Image (cartoon, rainbow, N blue to C red):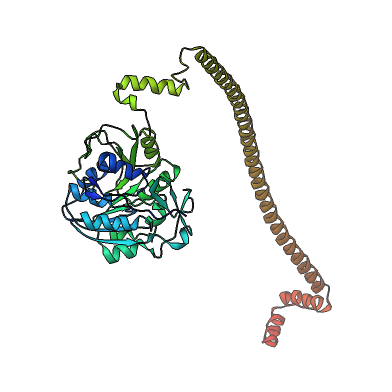
Length: 444
């Protein structure tokens, strides 16, 4: 557990007299003593995006330099400053009370969902502003969990609306933004810290899903026009960066990009990855006097893993031999890959031939199937014809049977006594007409 952050003597800054942590190695304290400002090129740019008398939500306020810095460049009407480190809180309160010419609320608490936070915070011993309650925080100093956990929606409802919402919470940005109701912030610019790690790529994917324009802005930690006019660079070529989410109106025409700063539109995580890769993070003092080609020369030798101390020396010869071995190994690996590619191409060609053979066989089988179907149709027609023929034969046989039965009946009739007697009487009547007349009358 660190000792309470005892304030040092007030120093003159561009914001007015500021109290800093007593630890002389503290990062922001060092910058305030050397330059009289911290991240001046950050607030100078952001202030050009805001209207006069804007309202700011400053989450991760530390000792107040962000809100006070915006107000120096453009008057603001209100700032809600939230700080989770109990040791820096008294310094923040004193600095705001002494220098703020705007209405304000200073709140002690951690923003987010309690379920997503660690039970205690962590901070770098020489950077109290790095306090984080993210579960992945690794600082050596332990910071007690605040007495209050605050939902960002609650802050916006109770203290908003805001023209600018700034989140500098050391890795907790994503979890906070996911709980923010965006419909409450349609007219708010979002300004989020962007560090050089893979979590920033996940963060920008989320920001892009909001369907608003996203920009990457990076600025040198050293401002040539700093408040104290110092030309000493504490961290040469060191840049800080953030992600800017503008409103539906887009980037304001009033935006002014300070010299040596970087502003890029971001449309994918790949865009951000490239921007971070091309942003300097560290350098040497002597590089300040070098031209661009000279810097490119140093960069090219660094890519070849050649150090200046061993360049063209005996040790350098060893480095050259190592590089030759590396190149030879790369060439061998390339040849191996080319051989594997050739083998794969051969297998692919064989697969194509096999596929063609299967296609030919499929065509033959389809032709045979058509033939069988035609043959089956012919057989069905033949069967139908035979069935019709069988029906006709059956009818003919039935008639023949009936005729044969009729003939037999006639034969039986002719062989009967009555037929023989009647037949004789008929012949006699033909020969005796009078007898025929008598018989007719008897029948009637």
